[in-house]
Length: 53
Image (cartoon, rainbow, N blue to C red; front, side, top):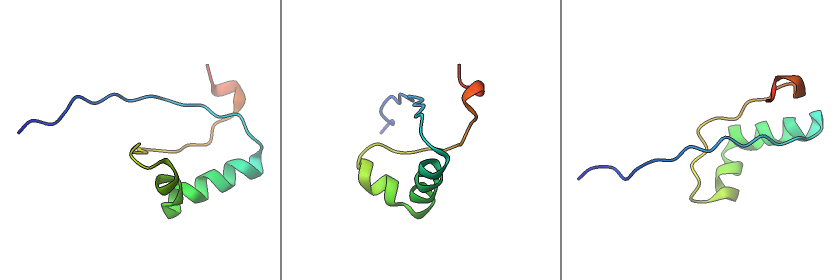
């Protein structure tokens, strides 16, 4: 049986450095995946605001 089609969506969240650390920790520990349920998180990266565009 073939796999269903995939769609990948990139999301950028503007936040404080402290909140960004909490998001990264939640991702590393698996809590972020628990919160988002069926959405599969492939990667989380911190970027500087000037790098978004």
